[in-house]
Image (cartoon, rainbow, N blue to C red; front, side, top):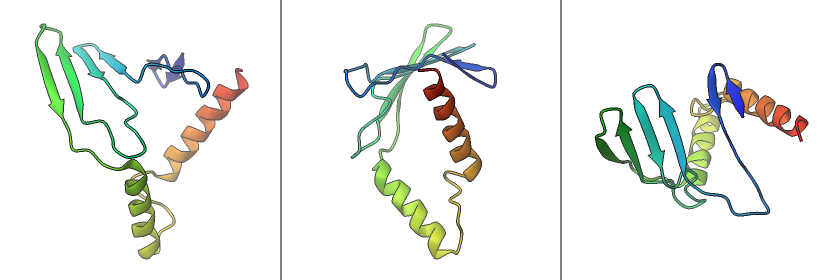
Length: 108
């Protein structure tokens, strides 16, 4: 269980066993089901299902991207413009991720 400033997340990860690729994000007015939350190294996930509190469902389709290519494109654009930070992943988010991973590892 992770507590991210009042948002709780139950996360499982493994490099030695197969885990479900789905994720569910629950809120006060419904939940979002993402059947393939991680996508792949080639393409991001394309669909999700929004389950509203009134029982209705909406399938949401999004454009897919190549995650590694998007990261490379953002890095190249930043360097060409003389920046050392890409707005798609600011340093504060990188540091927050590093702290979270360090805390997670310390619990093992």
